[in-house]
Structures are given as C-alpha cells and as structure tokens.
Amino acid sequence: MMNQSTDTIPFARPSLGREEEEAVLRVLRSGWLTTGREALAFEEEFARYTGAAHALAVNSATAGLHLTLEALGVQEGDKVLTSSYTFTATAEVIRYCGGDPVFVDLAPESMNMDPVDCERKIRSLLDKGESVKGILPVHIAGNPEGLEELFDLSRRYGLFLVEDAAHCFPVPSGRGMIGTWSDAGVFSFYANKTITTGEGGMIVFGNPNLKDRISAMRLHGINKAVWDRYTSTKAPWEYDVIAPGFKYNLSDMAAAIGRVQLKKAVELLQKRKDLVRAYLSRLKEADFLDLPAWKEEHAWHLFIIRLREETLSIDRNQFMHILRDRGIGTSVHYKPLHMMSYYRDRYNLKEEDLPLASELYRRVISLPLFPDMTMDQVERVCQVVLETGKSFQAAPVSLGKGHQ
Ligand SMILES: Cc1ncc(COP(=O)(O)O)c(C=O)c1O
Image (cartoon, rainbow, N blue to C red):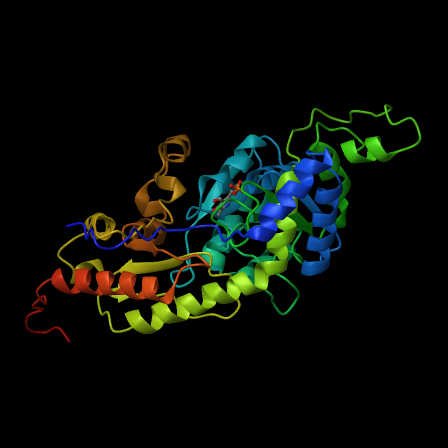
C-alpha cells in the first residue's frame, strides 16, 4: 500500500543549479544559439579534461556512435560485435550503416560483454568468411571492466574498438581516461547521465584519422563549420558538400550547460560514490540479493541489484511494483536486445543463444541513484527493499538426501 506520509524518490534526477541557469541566460542574451563559441569551448575543455587529442560535440551519444561507425566505413553486411545487454541505441547505429550487430553474451559479474564469448564469435564469423569490422562494447552502469581484454582482441584480429561510454564518465584507467585510448569513445549527456546537457554527447578519439570525416558529417557533410563560416574573413559563403551528412551538431545552449557540468564532474561522481557505499553497507545483510562489487574506477551511473529469485516467493516485476507503491522509482537495465522483436526476428535469435543475458534480465532492478539524493533517501530505499525481501522470502527448499 502507498505510504502517503513520504514523497516519491525518483529513480534519477539531474543535478543543476544557478551556474547552469546563468550559463544558458548568457547564451540566450548573446544572440548566437546554435553551434558556436560555447560548443568550441566545451570541446576544448572536454579534450583537456580527458587528455584526448580531440573531442567533437554532438547532439546525442546515438549520433556520436553513428558518425563514428560511418567514419570507420561500416557498410552493408559488415559484422560488428556488441553486447545484447544494452540500450537499443548501441545496436541501432550499426543498422543505420547497413551492418549487422552480432550479440555477445555477458560476463556475469560486470554485466559487460564477455571477451571469451566475443573471441569465440569472431573466430566463428571469420571461419564462415564474414566481413567482421569491429567491436562495440558498453560499460554498463559505468564499469569499464573487460575493456583491456577487448582492446587486445581488437588489435589481434585487426578490428576497430569503439566504446559506447554513455554510462562511463569520468573514469580514469592505467592508460588514460576511459574512452580516449581505443579508436573512439562516445559519451552521453542525456538527462539522467553522470553529467548532462539535457540532450547531447561527445566523441573522443584514439584514432586521429576519424576527426575530419566526423566534423563534416555531423553538419550535413559541409566542409566548414557554421562558426568558421561566420567568423571567416575570406569568402565565408563558399563551402563544399563532401557527402550527404547529418544534422547532429550540439547547440550553444546545451554546450554552455555542459561546460558547467564538466567543472562539477568529479564532485558529482564523489556524491554518487558516497551513496553507493551507503547502499552497499546497508544492503549487505540481505541474503535474497546480489550486489555490485565496489569499484573505485567506476562512474556509478546506475546501482543495479539482482534478486536471488529462487529465495523469493515473488518475481522481479512484483518486487518493483511494491517499491513503486511505496514511493520508490526504479528501472530495469536492460531487457536484452536479442529479446526485442526487431532483433529477435531479423536474426532468428532465441533466449538460450545468450543465456546469461536472458537470465540476468529477469533478476535486475536499478535503484534510485542521483547526486542530490540524500542519505535519508538511501536509508528509506534500503528499508523498503529489506522489508519487501524479508516478507517474501520463500520457505527454504528441502534438498533431500545425497545433496551437500
Ligand atoms: C548504453 C547507452 N548507449 C547509448 C545511449 C544513447 O545516448 P543518447 O540518449 O545520448 O543518444 C544510451 C542512453 O541512454 C545508453 O544508455
């Protein structure tokens, strides 16, 4: 039953303040709303921050991934290995280019693409004479585990490695910030991400050959940016169209918010980490749950718990309904793509083809996590989770003789 005395705790909420408001007002009053000075400054600041040689701002991570695959030459019939356990954007961009996603099952702990299954699938595709182009991993919840192994695989088999780093900013690694040392990394600034511009994204590169193509293709395939044309003294009306490009540029209003959020990125991450530590310590007594392992090199975009279904007399959906009725917003990350009708039917996929992803989907719940969440709110979520689990704990199963 709904507890009327308490407010709903949302699943996610952006952390925005006076500085972001002032940044937007500055742009509104400047008379220049589209891609210009602010977007350029955001790119430069982002490149400096991540240590990347270049950063290109776009209006979504989906656009960034599409542009990157296009620049890498993915075309009709090319195979790109990716995770099934992700948001649909990751695979749809392969289809935009005419390529086919080949879904890899997940490594159970991290929920990221399993490098062993990935190599098995690369070999089997190569044996069949298929055109295998690259690997597109996702760092689920902000955990880049497995990236080193996938990078090695990509170099051994001569494939590109593009990271869907939508969840994974800002995360350092031994080689530099995540996203910067593969062929390309793409970040999302969608409203619930670790930093936001409302809608937006950024591409960073380890492979410098991609920059010119992506710069042109993100704005109609024109060989000069609007801002270059505006500020140029030499025949600014003269430009060429090198290909039928896209309209994927980031507005200055969004970029201005991004510049403020970038400055707060470490502080926002610290708040997420404090909340995650509190969740982990409060929920560790729950024997009906599996919790994510603590990791320092993690963006903690999401906090995903897994129900031990066999210990409960209710299923995941019923558990979520109870949380909702008690004022707690939750979500599911993810229903795997091989279970979505488009991919299932087009590639004739069955649940048992990717058994770990199929099984995990039925157990996961993402609990509320956002920088302005209070410790009291974490406590309330934990109380409701613990009460719900305890009141629906199934009677212990008798294993009979012979079982240990
Ligand atoms: C894993 C993943 N990839 C890609 C995207 C697409 O990001 P955007 O909304 O910025 O296009 C998302 C967005 O939620 C995501 O979660």
